[in-house]
Length: 259
Image (cartoon, rainbow, N blue to C red; front, side):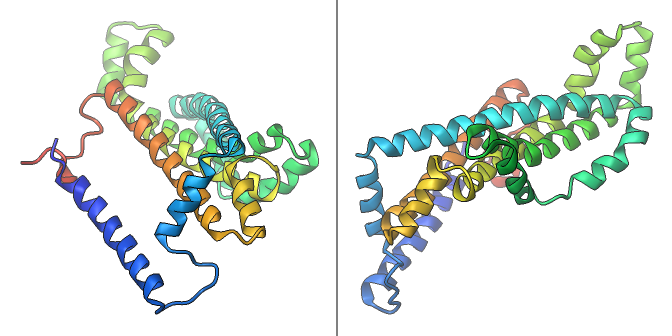
């Protein structure tokens, strides 16, 4: 694997942070609540000594993964059904297209009315929007199974379960995995949103708490941690996808495997 693209990306981030530090340190921009990157690292270091921070991080991670798993189970199941059955797709696609564009944050008031400030509220806010990427991509993956594979299944007289496991699922797997990645990113975003505006727990609530306390160093520290959580979750899922489907998620176009 060629590490140059990765180093180039880190170099760009380093250059941005260096310019930020230089501008703040030189006094060219004077905002009372815009700290320098060095000050943000100091705030993050102080956060690492607080037990509350780890409890908040665990809460956000648990809510994100829990909501994502529920959304994936529902989305993949319904998507496989709609993609495999022309009749189901014909009578359900209009409903999918009507419900899918609903704004994700619109579910926050409904979830608060139903469950109050609770983990159930957060899960509803996560599942409602995170369901659609996995459902749509799974449906398209199953609907796009080549006809020649269907002919092979018919020739071998495979049962519906055998066809699902041996033909349809392997053929649709790349599209399904893309939907899983999109759902996971959306699950983390909605978990933080629910914590910011509804559930007084987790990293989102910690971010708002530090903002209200006029503590921008720790506030930006929470932003950094949330970003790192998203990067780590995506990296883990990409690694798992590469293990499940070798070769599907290599990136020669980005120079990863080029000399």
